[in-house]
Length: 281
Image 1 (cartoon, rainbow, N blue to C red):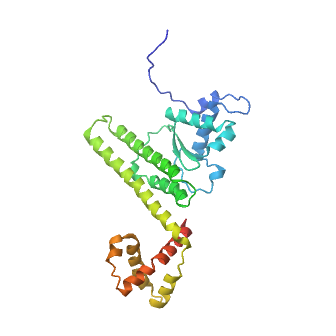
Image 2 (cartoon, helix red, strand yellow):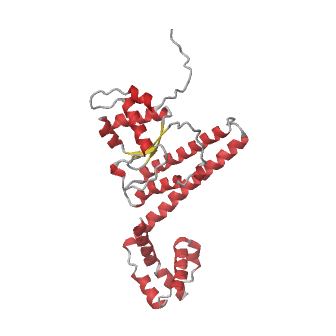
């Protein structure tokens, strides 16, 4: 008899159960072995050797891997690895954060203790993840299309996590109060993401100035300001306004000698700022 109505249910199993279910079939890993391998990697905070130099702070039950590494280790095709991860994520057994050339996997596990849902606004790693992804775009390692897709995915995951937290706090997801709070959370996430992108765009634009000549501003500091640091701080503030504020630029009188002098120093000011940015990257 065919049962056309399937009853949804969840099955809880310890790691020992999966160890028991493993079957070794040649060098190629089975799906069960691949899933267990992801569990082992996440529980140990595994980071692929190829990614050791990347500064990414893993949360509990996370691992940082590449599809190529998993394909090589499991003796699978890369497309098979991606399809497997898609399916396991659809089952709700893992979550992915896709970065430029790697993926952070969070395995869905239960430790025996109820997990406290965290407010996405209080998670500092969301903006950190965005900055890490955008840094490759600033330096020209990835395209706008690639980094845009990744930023969009990170934002959608953060919004989805917020909605999940709200559902756990209040089962009545139709509540007006919950809807308003979820909307404010979503607005905050979008504002954070767009702000990080805007800042990265400024960094990318500034980066083009690193080959300009900074010496005019250095000479101005030495000769005109007598190497007075407080005076240079004030000049730097005025130059920053001239660069970023179009109204301030228009307000400078062309007949004003001091104002004209500041205008001639804008390129060297940006050059120094761009070089300083390179030193912090």
